[in-house]
Amino acid sequence: MTAQSFRRVAVIGAGKMGLPIACHMAGRGLHVTACDLNAELVAAINRAECPFDEPGLAELLARARRDGHLEATTQTAAAVGEADAILVLVPVLLTPEREADLAGIEAVARLIGKAVRAGALVSFETTLPVGTTRRLGALIAEQGREPGRDFRLVFSPERVKSRLVLERLGTTPKIVGGLTPACAEAGAAFYAAALGAPVLRVDSLEAAEFAKLADMIYRDANIALANELARYAEALGVDFAAVRAAANTSGEAQLLLPGIGVGGHCTPVYPWFAIGDAERHGVELALAADARAVNDGQGAWMLDRIERATGSLRGRTAVVLGLGFRPGVKEHVCSPAFLLRDELERRGARVLVHDPLYATEELAALGFAGVVRLEDARADTLILNTAHVPYEALDFASLATHGLRVVADGRNLWDPAAVRAAGLVYLGVGRP
Ligand SMILES: NC(=O)c1ccc[n+]([C@@H]2O[C@H](COP(=O)([O-])OP(=O)(O)OC[C@H]3O[C@@H](n4cnc5c(N)ncnc54)[C@H](O)[C@@H]3O)[C@@H](O)[C@H]2O)c1
Image (cartoon, rainbow, N blue to C red):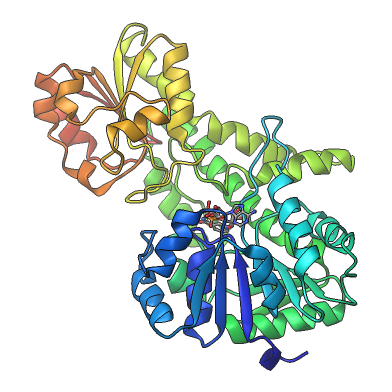
């Protein structure tokens, strides 16, 4: 099968990743059908209304619709039946027991099994526990189509991140692992043509799945190390930012930034895909598990420091600044704000949340009491979770006159001297 054979593509899951990928491929001349369960999303895409705040996406979507290279549908089976390549980008999150919740993607596999046509490429891009793609291939096979013989099966993890998707899709090496060498070859040919990115072939489905998890665990463990060292720096009274900058000049160290926690449906989630599975294989991923504990414990660590500096939080009012887990991005999955809220409430504090990207009703639906004007909160404690740009210029002097006493700068956004000049207690991460 040559790259020329892949004319029609079905992307299952037209979300923050799937839609930009669909538009990128449409922009390279393929005919792409974006499939989603969400009828409103599908209708918006077909009206060329961009549903996500992704740089460059609105223009690309408008062009793809105008050129007739992209359409969206809720009729996934029909689109799969016509596709030469099927890409799966539906999310896999965690169950309450911290196992991968595979029910949704298994349903997608069964649906593909019913509709996939002979010779097509099926590529799972959603991050998965090692061994899952092979099992999904077996589910597809239950419908009578044999992977490797009747269709090509690959795993090719999506490695770009939102707000940088279109900037990076054409340059980030696309890892491809196949069920057989012929599957991998077909996958590599497809991605080279459809993405225009360098392709990195690995030996197996499992190696490709593992590469994505290793990347995520590295990131989580690196941040945890930075967080631990920042705690040590706080105890020593040394500025960790300067230590980190100096250490990172060796050409060996690449310490990431410490902070009040790690959010999103990637870094805090995917290590669990490996931790439990490794245990079943008799291997303890102690560092990965410890990293999760350190990073999830950063909020409580900051609250301990607040209590050491200013007394018990019981009966006090705290405002968490920022629900989203990335500045300027309206995404809150696994945001550290949830851990902060729970820990503050456990200590008897009243918790309010401020985020310029969310309406009060949206905050309420997520279990947060929202505040629109910070002065109205009359809070004595301010805890920064998200370094949204508008927070850079907070009027601390004014807030101090409205009862503020302590500022916990979870992202080291502010100049400590300026905050202290307003008569407030300042606590940063790794800052003396
Ligand atoms: N968002 C990121 O920054 C990022 C980065 C790298 C990799 N990824 C990977 O991409 C996956 C998708 O992420 P996302 O941010 O696009 O998620 P998302 O929640 O924005 O979008 C997922 C879409 O899939 C749709 N969907 C769910 N089940 C479906 C089904 N059975 N059939 C059709 N559509 C279905 C949903 O309606 C939703 O629109 C993640 O699970 C992750 O593995 C995401």
